[in-house]
Length: 372
Ligand SMILES: Nc1ncnc2c1ncn2[C@@H]1O[C@H](COP(=O)(O)OP(=O)(O)OP(=O)(O)O)[C@@H](O)[C@H]1O
Ligand SMILES: [Mg+2]
Image (cartoon, rainbow, N blue to C red; front, side):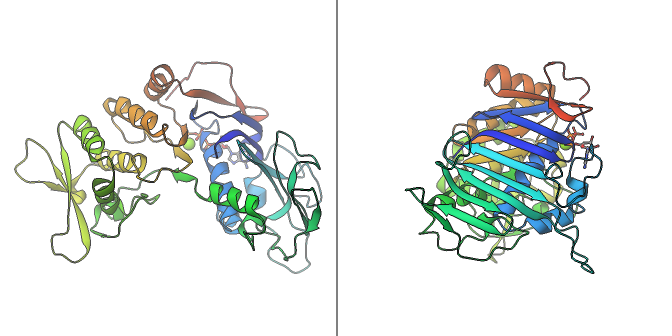
């Protein structure tokens, strides 16, 4: 299921933004224009489907702080204009979620919890009675069967969470279940923390891993999994091309189910360990591992992957991203001119340039990227 259209309303710097997406998408723009906010909005939607909407919003400071602050009186619980709306039109279903402030309960300290005010799932470009599959309004939720028979969803829903996270009886609601598992499988990578005490640098449990964790903490196991079940030649070629013929081996030196990375460089007598590698080297190895996953997701979202990489690595990164777009829809945010040039001219990425104006983040018609 690929995303054709993403609509975000009243989320951080975004008042209203509609993005038409293709298989390979590059979102660029000046610092502060809202690139990461697009990434976070998609992540929020995925978290909502995982039942993490309330905790995610609480971690970000509560619903009023994540809403676009360009309107006054934003915190009215009953005002339709003070809602955060997220919607995705995929090639199969469309899903819209509208989140707002809860009805105040005297004495309650949970007044910053989000409340899911509306949720709709439908087939086709616009929601109509004839193509709705689900319609949630406050605490009443209806589902529609193939004959447009409207039925009240029989379970009581938690108002702070998406219906897709609370779905019971998947066999009775197969479309809803398909959509929720598609969104749940979106994969996000933001930045790999590679400081001295990073888990990426430490020995790691030798658990077969077809997916790199979003913090890179199973890097050694994920590399070994690629070696055993997938395209080891491409992996080796990408590492060798980027680092002057270097090679990576994974070892379990004490046979204690703890994997370690050995990085062999042509000019050194001994292999280096993960703890000795540079931040940029480790980040690039993480990106190669994430993008050569033996289990590609339907949608893969990368936020500013060029961070800490030397400009020489950017053409390699572009090739890696383009290669991954053969198996996954890719949405990448970046302010690297080099990555933009490579992805758009060589790999024909859909370029979305953002700018920050009085009405928040907008699509820019101007192709000058400005400062990086
Ligand atoms: N609730 C809010 N209302 C309005 N604007 C907000 C809100 N929260 C954050 N912002 C604005 O969002 C912008 C930051 O957006 P974001 O982090 O997406 O930028 P970016 O394009 O990723 O920048 P960079 O290239 O520096 O990473 C800032 O301009 C900030 O002022
Ligand atoms: Mg950013």
